[in-house]
Length: 407
Image (tube, rainbow, N blue to C red; front, side, top):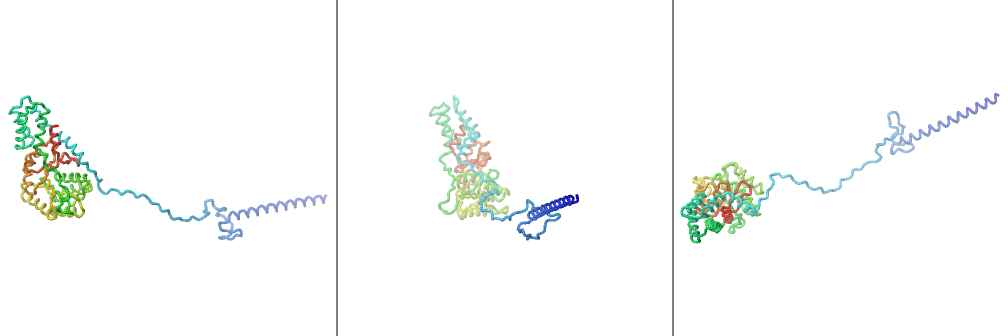
């Protein structure tokens, strides 16, 4: 019995020892695995590294998953050609002026609207069953009311009366054809209406110079701006000269017209400066920049002020020290009628006017002023203003003018 108890005790002791040994081996394997997982990058198995200790309280038992495993090298950016951003415009957008051909079409349309009463009145009188002396007097009165002038009106009536009586015409279409021929004769299509903007042959290297003159309120500065648009549409290089130094807003107004079509403006920084010196400087700039045309805007003045008119003559003389003046354009308001003839006569004596610009020819203008002013000065109407639009300045066409009257 005692022997059996000893055997049982020995078996239990061996079992306990075996169990303890197994537990020790398991714990040792776990500790080894933990040390291996907790080893930092670059730390060898022998425990060499930064400090070689196992993680304690507050330390990560394992390497964090977001820890860097390799370094990041900074590489140079590739050479890429980026497109250049368009520069923002610093001034008003440049406009493209309307071609001259389109202006002539509008000329016919607007003249037809403004002069219909004249043409209809004449045709109504000449289409009567009986054309007696009283009828011819009415025809002459109608022409006079249209500002044609006494001389041209009398001449037209006399010739037309002779032809109607000689030919015995009563057919309205034939009478209209005769009237057209006579009106065209007094408007005189043979006059040279070419605007001289070519470089002067006797002054090589210099631009053509165009002086624009007139009284206040005729639209002179506006006409200069519109004329610049006409020339730009013809691919000419233009320089503007703001020689109207007495009206504060004149230079600003002219500069605005120039900016709209990319044309430079020469002006004085001082109000009331000598207009002749500004004109001279404008011609100098035009010569240096090899411009084709220099347009000189002069101060508006009354034709009965001798001192102001003498100053206008001085402007022209100063310009001609370096180059001849190619054109002197007189701007007249077509609505002033016969009063415009008095202005024209005085200006022509001072600066030798070479062409007329009639503004405001549409609306209340009577049309006959075209004939009257040409007869008074012996110079042609070269340009007509038809409205307030920037491209409402057109070359004068005699046939288009007469056809518009009889439309």
